[in-house]
Image 1 (cartoon, helix red, strand yellow):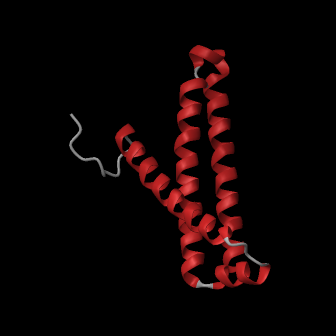
Image 2 (image 1 turned 30 degrees about the horizontal axis):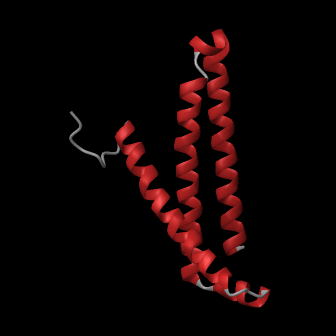
Length: 119
């Protein structure tokens, strides 16, 4: 029986909880962006909106949420479909390469976002 949902150990329940929390953050961010786009936004208004520290932090939080959400999803796909049973003897090697590739791409996108926001 599961006793601690928020433990730091890797478990399916903690992944599920993290995905739900990051999904709520992403919905809030995209609703905020969508609401600002409804009336039409000029470049100057868009630029001034993202010059504020609060919007930069909210954007960074959304990107980190997207990265965590994507990592859990891609990890789940990799462990479900890239197995020795389905892929033969190279399944574990392919899964490792896939996970390293996904992690590297996500890392690059997060660093790139930080450079854009505060560069």
